[in-house]
Length: 338
Ligand code: KG4
Ligand code: ZN
Figure 1 (cartoon, rainbow, N blue to C red):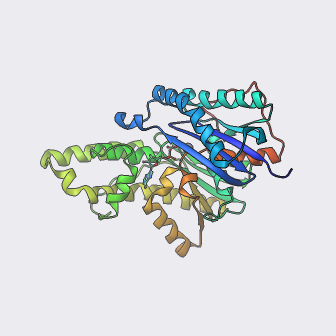
Figure 2 (figure 1 turned 90 degrees about the vertical axis):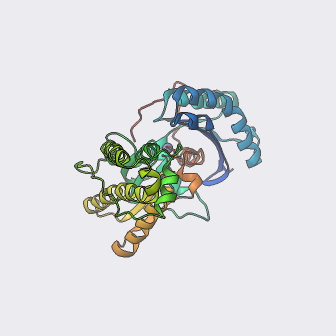
Figure 3 (figure 1 turned 180 degrees about the vertical axis):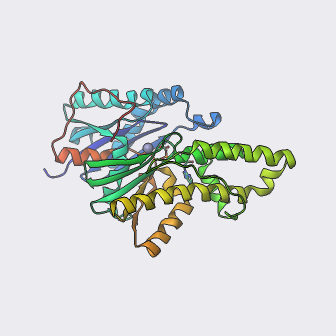
């Protein structure tokens, strides 16, 4: 039978997700987002692992039901081994191992960062896959990384963040402005109405293709403290312009590093992934780069950008095809480099 059905499980951070793929096509992709973290303004690891524990069985049931697949038809189980929060990873890892053992089918471990990149190879009418070689930039609440991708499993990390992820830079800046978590989408929304030249924030000086965002957060903090001392309503009166200026600075940092990566490698195919890929500003900048610099840019469907099990499933399928399986002694890995 040429049709392989892969059940995939993702539980690395605060989303519990299960997906069923038939070869490279997604039959279902169920995501239970944990709302509990909103009250705390960020992900609380202990609460995340408990919520995964509660969600995982219903989410897997839903994924199988939506795909209209019986578990006996499954060819293999793929799961996120890392990187991520240990308590969260353990839930998905233990569940996947048990189910594979029970069904007596192969187990496939997946690196979450490789999955963000290989999500571009999900077969879907709403997305096109890049050709090799390409540059991948993964930007989310947990990651900021530029990777040279020579083949499906031949990847080289060219640069990554030394401190905060870019999504964190958005969220922490938003928090300083009194916006609820996660503030990234709100900054995007207000930025569209503001003037990015109103305020200037310093860009970090980081060599090569690495990133740093913690200094930006600090300079925004001092800036807001200074201005609200003079005018207590400064933030509310200037919300759009502050957001536009903050977003502009973040996008400048990302685009400068991408340009440097293009210069260093000569590769002009750029594949973006992660939740921050939803940002309308970055989409605009990439479009400009297509027109002015001859880049070819790729962004997966939004549901394959944010954390999801479908991207774990595509890696599962690609490994299945290559006969790359994992045995039951496998353990989750909080730090797991590409
Ligand atoms: O990939 P994701 O859902 O979860 C992980 O962090 O792995 O990414 C979430 C991040 C959050 O930091 C959120 O603020 C940011 O993506 N984000 C955005 C936008 N939509 C989501 N940041 C800026 N503009 C957006 N439109
Ligand atoms: Zn992620």
